[in-house]
Image (tube, rainbow, N blue to C red; front, side, top):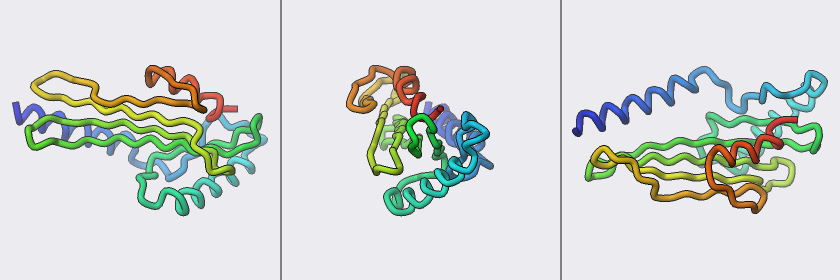
Length: 152
């Protein structure tokens, strides 16, 4: 059982590492209009400066920034995935995802979910999801609610 749990953890860590290998810090959202490329570049620079000032202790390696021309704002999306093994051998996975308005230093959306794999069973132990003060009930709903900020 321990070998299976260790193998699962190693696989998930390797998958996460390889899935994001080669991506630049603050990769630009591919949904940016061609005419907004200068504004998107400025947004990328703003997001990097924002991160350095406000997120210095956070993992920013998978962040995505996007200039939203409809809202005339720069948004930074920061997903974080974490695995830990407890002393009892259970694997605890935590997903975080935060969307920030870089210009106004405000959190627009926040998602966190913790799950535990113990004795072959997954259990959800913590869940939080809000977008502009509105609660959401799933990661799918969260992604749908943040889409207008990260596109357009």
